[in-house]
Length: 221
Image: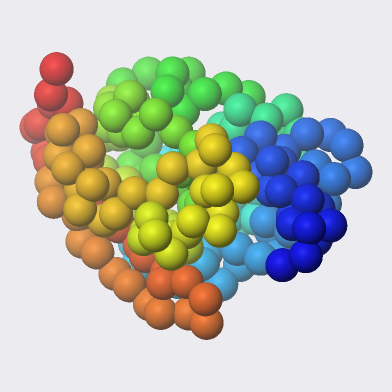
């Protein structure tokens, strides 16, 4: 990659963790919705959406995953949260009807301090976002807001730290962890061992982890 191309790549990638409201940030959100679409479909193929239940997308980005889940689970209520105000705005705009009718709420905030009571959701999803979390804290928060027996689904394009160096070298805030590392963190947060699904793509190996909160378990201290 040429120096000028590498510089542009790094400038664009900086918006992946927290897209802004600039033209570059808006382009990144548009790109997330389009570029992550195959990962959404792969992940959703391994997740059972709760009928009449409540779903949270943690780190909702441009709102496309919420849109797809709203279509596939028409009797569910949904919520999204993102630390980026631009992402919150984009998600609300992409899901305008659901937001206006009260079927979906989208909040600005951190996954490390979720603004919902204990045992609120039947399913929590996270697509291409755990790289930027403090996972130990965030996973405990996800376990807290999940109902007993609820599921946490994590969709990833990268689960190999060595293969992801092209991304992490350019974006120090991004941390790619192996499935084994993520499984330990999930266990520490009180989850049962996750079901792991993998699919090799042209460049990366997509991964979907689905971990259940045991019916009467509590997160470890």
